[in-house]
Length: 499
Image 1 (cartoon, rainbow, N blue to C red):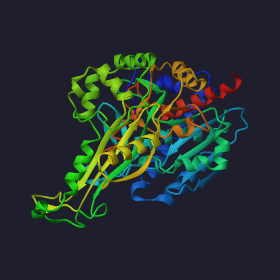
Image 2 (cartoon, rainbow, N blue to C red):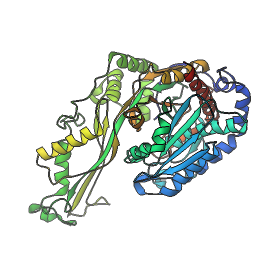
Image 3 (cartoon, one colour):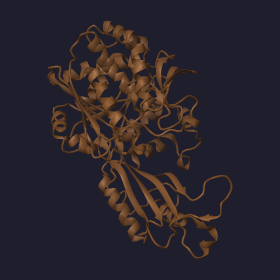
């Protein structure tokens, strides 16, 4: 969920020692955060060592209970595991007797990993020196999202250790299925006690990293939605396909599930290979406004296109478009993406088989005003119209996009924290990635949402995922500076009750 944004920044020394005079006795609190540095890092390493992987049903009960205990240890008075029908959620409250209540969203699950692809064990949480960055922690979940979340918990721990009462009350809702598109998270939020607590909040935010290598930071005003699904063809979907792999000579008289799946997939996009071609898919797409294009232009002007391309390992955007056009596409266009294809023999050499099964793993990315239910219905109708009744559709999870007005007091509070710290930033219309903010942002709660924080990391969903612990660049925050910014944010949010 990291963004690549603006053009100016301030040193972490300034971040740590008093740029935001609104936080009382800030320097003293920064010393507490610094004194707890090793404890914070060890806590993050311990969390990384216990991965909850929803797709594998790994550490489901253990991960939820660990999240519950993390909340209690950080000062929440109440925390409980909430059944969801799948991987459970965790609900916690901290009553500081304050007039304002802030909602926080955590995810405690992580993506799968292959240790053979990593330079260090993915669950070790090893501290390593990264050239040009500083000391980082390497591990699955380090930046997505355990590192930023631990920075927020470190802020609470510092307030607790210093004997301070929080300036706001907190409502924490955590889930263990974000990495499979949150199929059961609405059930967690619909829990009567959870829903009642969230209704009292001024908004819900997710801790994240937003700085690039130059210390540039940003605020996102929303995120795309996501729907994950599988298309399956084989003996389980029709008797014209074999139940198991058979000799490839039989392709002269037996239909191939693999070719059938390819034909179905090809119908989902235009001949260019990327424009969605599902009937009616774009009917409810809300075009980018002039203001949103202006914000994108500001972001484009403040970022290094070559560095972005280098990070992605590509040399051209689609159609060799300029950076502004490709950025508008990035944030404003829905997508139909193939994550993976599985069929037949994939080992060394050939095997001359006709596969008995073929499966594609896909996802949609949705923009306002698309909905999950709408696109799922249109996908099924599209396939049925073309006679693909033998293609099985399995939707594993999903949710719609979320959007918050830039003039919302909730967003203005984030802006003021950056401005008081001297950290320049840009506003981004939405994140091209996804998180289930619509569960809070949509009916019946209708709350503003956002992603907020500083610091750096990379490699989410990939090998060698990392999160910055001690920065070599004075313009970029390590975990202690990120924690202090969350303290400042809590004090700024507290003012929302006095407006």
